[in-house]
Image (cartoon, helix red, strand yellow):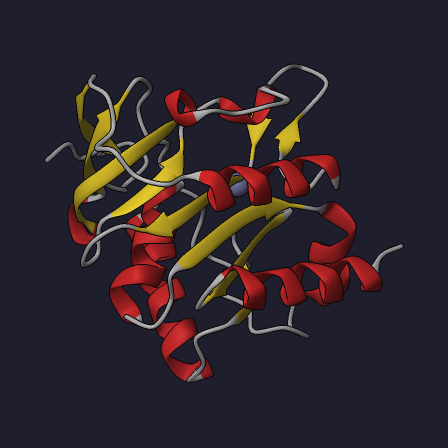
Length: 201
Ligand SMILES: [Zn+2]
């Protein structure tokens, strides 16, 4: 475990096996990522830093997620996804398999999957207007729990438990612009994206 005495939080660490993903159907995952990219809910800032990611449950609490930095790419294929095959939220650690490693934001997805077994799809988007207008309107995680921390994962778990639902929206209170969408399946996710988009067009 790495511990930063200066900043006082556990740093994100990961194990990565650079290998092909197991054979599986990623067509819906890729098509929904495209939809979110086209809506600019996943993408890249002018400086070229990517934001946002999408995942689907694989087996148990394992999941397939768009890899670190993939927000820059207009179109994704299987090589842009990785399998998170193990994680430990309390240690801010995960293990992944794929051409590219998973980002620290994958642990927010892990918090959702490990809290509610009915949830099969998770999306993390960035949207300044939705975030600032909907904070404390939609369920909102702890504003002092910052991106990439154990506290964020813990706060997401608690927020989701209180919601008692397997589809919805969480505003990430301690991550400016950060929003999580989660659903049982892609049909349910589609409704959430539609409703969210209606709020801000
Ligand atoms: Zn983010």
